[in-house]
Length: 169
View (cartoon, helix red, strand yellow):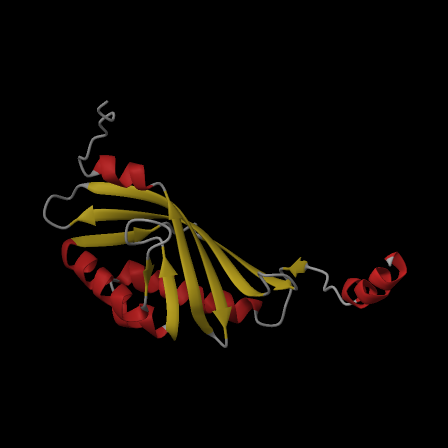
């Protein structure tokens, strides 16, 4: 019985794909350029250029309240057009980009990680909120197909005047 089990599982073990990652790959520079174009468009208040960097079926996570909320490119455009109407975005000039290609496993593909601070200024009051953020982008065929935003939402909410209340018992 053990012999038969070993015979059946051997092909699975031998064909298991090894997972590896590298920052040195053919599309690394082009992928960073696509993501950088997107980030620069945020700085310039240009929702059309932002959307032009996305695939038609791109999924954008983390902007609309919770990390599990997802937007499509059209919803992202509307979200930012509303934001640009009342605020100005200033992206840290020291923004860092890291292209990574993963081979094998569930994260296989080409990624660009971004570390930045987006300082948002209210156009009427001039009040500023600095939002340090990490954004992870999956890039395929020269377009961003998935983007996940990670930032301190509590910092944003308290900067806007919201307060935390302990739960009532």
